[in-house]
Image (tube, rainbow, N blue to C red; front, top):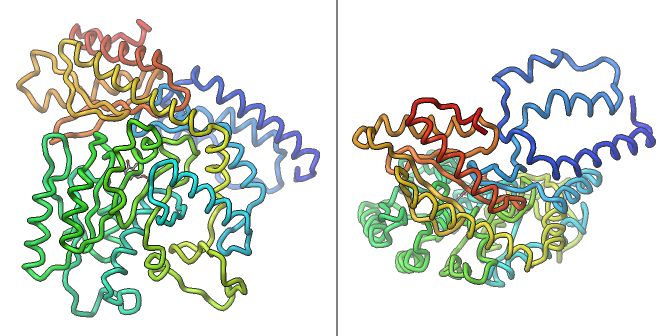
Length: 485
Ligand SMILES: *Cc1c(COP(=O)(O)O)cnc(C)c1O
């Protein structure tokens, strides 16, 4: 077994040289993996080796077998879903955190892990204009941050669900309000919390895909009148499909009047409020009872790192704190992060966040995010100017939703959907760029999300030209834009 220190140092050098080069050269690789289902698995033996193998064999197979099966989220022309960045300081933080391998469940289990997390979350809070009284805690993903927020909202109802549960007792239906644009995790969280999908109420949206606060007020009042118990409104700053921004100040007023918990999901768009001219995104945030921001989405922190901020630290603790004898600890004036969630063990994620905030600095983060928004606005301009294309949603941030409408398909909704889905697949098959699709009011939509730190205006320009030329080629029926490139 190659565990001598000398072997490890050599392997680490090989890996670190590879990583540095990879981050530079990723732009030359196909963005979307080109393997067929099962192709990676078929190259691997059915059982683990009897005797340990040298590190070099592992690294060889990483390059030979694993890499072809990777879709490169670090690629500057990764425009699907939400573009993210495994940044250099973030990679360093992950490396060191892996080496330390601490389990930061209790303060004493690694005081620095708790205190670096507290400090980094304080820096982030101030940079984003979130009030000082909001306590922060790191979870792996927004879906899990949201779950904990909803659990705290449920705890705030004083129904003693923590002890008595939701089954086998007489409880009114607990209701959660969101829109059809809300991220699907809210519904999943409702499933897990015993609320049920039927009690997740979809509030109508306006033409710009934003929650209608008056409809929300009416739905809450109707539920109260029917003996149901409004528990939580989940508003979104930057919805997943279009990045629409729900009117949080108006929604907050409805929540205050009705005494309902306001949860704000700013997983993607939250980081943008570091940009002075985008600070308004956080308007009304001071009324939120919980807020989710994902530095692993649009702040160059490697997956995974999501943050839940809440002014109700005590409620979150009350929902989750449960200390078995083997975890009792003598310190009384420290934070033990295990008290704030369902998981006991936790990684030292704060390190990579702290490294990213320090290595970039506020000024550079502002420049990068501002640049992404500018690139998206330029793209929207080209789409609008191109005959046969149409924009399908407002684009206030770094995502643009549009589609190609060839004249002969204009009146055939199903054919238009199929045409646009195929257009996306043709573009993706080139390996040059990766875009994804969504559906808006049932219509298949091309969607470009800009968010990688290495993306340049030229990357966006070239990708747009690829899309436009692929669309033109499809009209001619020759579909050979891959060869053209
Ligand atoms: C991406 C996204 C999520 C889910 O993020 P994960 O961290 O992958 O769970 C939740 N809400 C919004 C608005 C998102 O854009």
